[in-house]
Image (cartoon, rainbow, N blue to C red; front, top):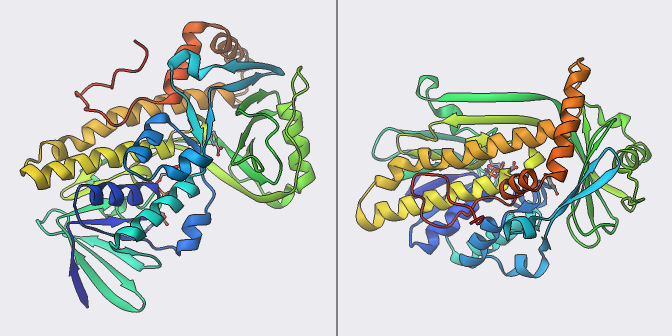
Length: 406
Ligand code: APR
Ligand code: PHB
């Protein structure tokens, strides 16, 4: 068996693992990243696409924001289509902040490029990954790479291997607590070769269910439809998808998405999930390995970025001053932001989806809330401040960071 050593062993090369490796490199800390998928698969996997300003600032400040600044689409607001009435939420006017639309796979591509330039290790297509010795002073990662069994001995392990990874399940069940809620609906998502017909996102609540109009570039539209968790994609030929999208996005202003060839489609389940604490011995969990939000609030990628920023600061303090104070509070500090985002994502999901509870009271109450949220300045401001997100990169005093709303 080949044995090597590093300071931080990182499992998973999604946005969390790659950004952590990058921030650690900036702090002069060595790491090895191991990823079970192939490089092209990781780069081409289409996921979320909304970056909070805090995430954008983190990428720019850490030197990986050049292409993002050139190609990212900056949005000052979005609309909610309330049963055919388009209402705009002016994020910039309400909060002074905005969001940027830039695909998660583009973030991943930029971070892989930055990693390659450092010459530090990033291994794709590793198999049989396992972590051990998590409570010892030298935990390890074992795996097969190119037919050879390898072990990396580390000071710390970062579990950045997503919801289906092996790090969280390696923690004894009695050492963690899991909070979970699974929703009775899912999203059917498509990518279409069509110029976006609106410069901003449109979230739509229609009698037939939720729909979302988003985009990836000036030539590619991204759209979603509420569907069943076990929806059979073979029942959804392209023309049925377009008919349903056009119906659910329909509105009194006559706005509609441009129709074009569908190049990708898939169904994404909806779940809220948190593990506490986000640490076991010398292993720290970050991103989807520790928490999942339903995609309605566009928080998943941004939470992952906030976690690894915090973890990189805590590890830097350990190596620079020998103090573990920040590492000790890593989980508590992350969980404050995580639960705020959980609450917001659950709320936005409940606000916008059709849920057949069988009691018509629920849909009338939901409609009253939609009217309130899209008409009251106070309610819109609350929505906007959560949607644009709370700042990441400044000192955390143990409370939720103060927002820009002064
Ligand atoms: N060994 C090594 N790598 C693994 C393993 C394993 N056993 N299991 C999973 N991985 C890899 C996955 O292939 C993936 O590349 O870990 C990576 C985890 O990446 P993500 O799932 O993208 O999670 P994260 O980096 O936390 O980013 C969160 O992803 O799901 C979206 O909405 C979510 O945008 C958010 C973001
Ligand atoms: C996306 O563009 O993929 C997207 C946008 C907003 C969301 C979720 C996904 O809330």
